[in-house]
Amino acid sequence: MIAGVSLLGGYLISTARQAVVRPPLVVGQDAVPPSGQDTARVTLENVGGPVIDIRPAQGEADTLLVFYPGGLVRPQAYEWLGRALVARGVQTVIPAFPLDLAVTGIGRADGLIAQYGQGKRVVIAGHSLGGAMAAQYAASNADALAGLILMAAYPAGNVSLKDRTLPVLSLLAERDGVAAPDDVRGGLERLPGGTTLTVIPGAVHSFFGRYGPQKGDGLPTVTHAQAEEEILNAVQDFLTGLK
Image (cartoon, rainbow, N blue to C red; front, side, top):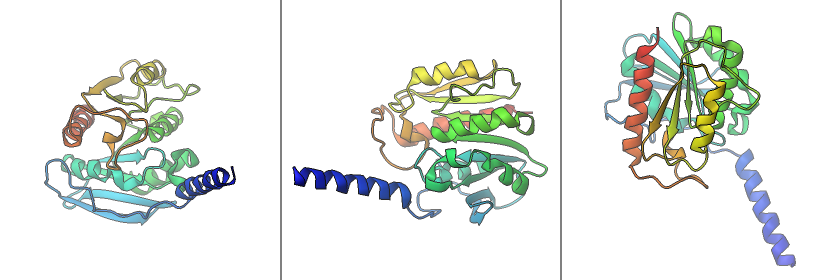
């Protein structure tokens, strides 16, 4: 009995430590875009907290993408997407939140838009919990945004953008075991009527980032690289269609 209690206590302490002590914020280690062509300039900056800034190495961006990471996921997991988008004139900023939980700073986009958004159209995006928080931000700031991208995410039950005219892209991983496909589809009821739902065939929840397998997720029927290509194509098409 004592041994069991000790093991349980050790597990709880270990779990709590993992939540509080987050891995270092490091860029460039697993961020080559699907094309293999990398023309990005990536820096770590401090704008109300740490942020990864990904911009074209040459020329100016005309679009700012503010990306909220998934719960307990380090920002660098989405660096691949920012690097892939620079060829389309997109600057991507990915903030780090306390405990890696976007719910601790839903309004973080305010400072990032003020710092980087001048003269650019601004799109907010997020994965999983980060997507839900991005939707909540968009619900209160739709007039300042050109679009919203949700990856394996949907607005919380008390959040609605139904009456907004904001363009929205919702990406659903076909074999997602974390954000149930039915829930993602159900979230469309709280999004603008013109929302685009795109299914990423054979993909799972964790394929939107590069952070490894996730507990409770489904089993993919495509490679991670194949899923990334589909995700990138959907995002690029959405951004191209924005006014």
